[in-house]
Length: 194
Image 1 (cartoon, helix red, strand yellow):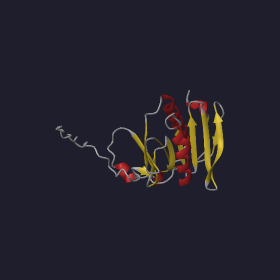
Image 2 (tube, one colour):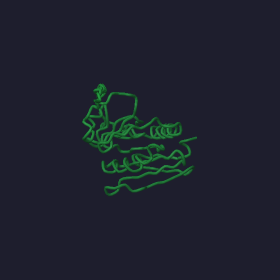
Image 3 (cartoon, rainbow, N blue to C red):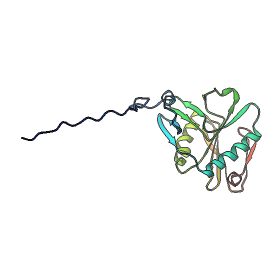
Image 4 (cartoon, rainbow, N blue to C red):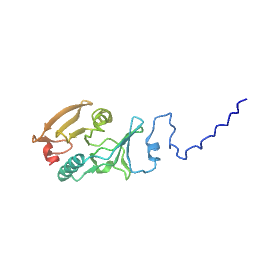
């Protein structure tokens, strides 16, 4: 006769998710996540964690932020990430740079699409920025969406026309983009990474 030893049960882990794992996540769920130092976004109910940006990414974002701030009208704010932009209950993003009317902000977030959202591409975020975020900003009616590729360097600008994004500028290197939305500003991609 073979004696079978009882299998010991392992104790349950003490960590539990702040939402039910069988449904899409909402912004209320996201606000219950403990602050662990990571940057989280929510796109169509799916949690997206973004790693720390590279030096080149930070230089491009910082220099573009400075350029936008210099020309910013008094009734608008220019903010850099992280700051929550609520596009819907299941989509909360943190663009690298955003421009919106001062009156549209709450203390915690921007509860609507900004006038301008800017994403600086990184290898880990390229597809998210060019596909998922592009479509979510467009669906939310964000008037202008810019993408900066610091590796080439290139700036691509889309503006809302008849309910869809149309590319209005694509410049690389020392070429200048003279833009009017949300206000007049000139951007030279090479100047963002020097």
